[in-house]
Length: 115
Image (cartoon, rainbow, N blue to C red; front, side, top):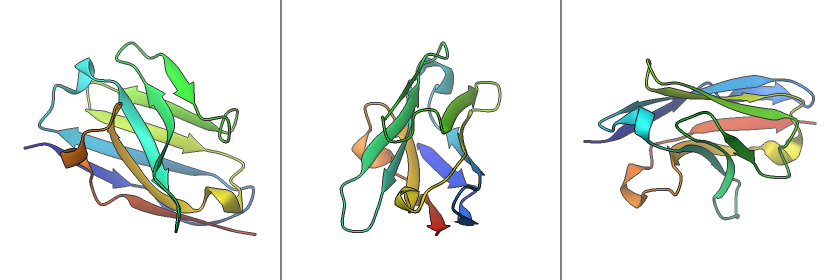
């Protein structure tokens, strides 16, 4: 059974930073492309960053140069370092494979950025 457990969200002022973590189990983590997604109220879920098994990264334009995705294959964990946060970054953040698997969504972690 696959489990993806996100943590690290919170309330932060604009310009602040947060580091999200996602612990994976039930998959061969090191073989998979992992992604961080977010869903703001009333909007569709979107992919914000992904990282290949070899460490190649891709970012949405809206977060490029502010967010950094990384992974620790020994710990089956993927991270999202978020700097210079903006109110538009407010959302629930999820991790999943890239492309996402419908049955793998976890509870996510709420990130709220105040202005």
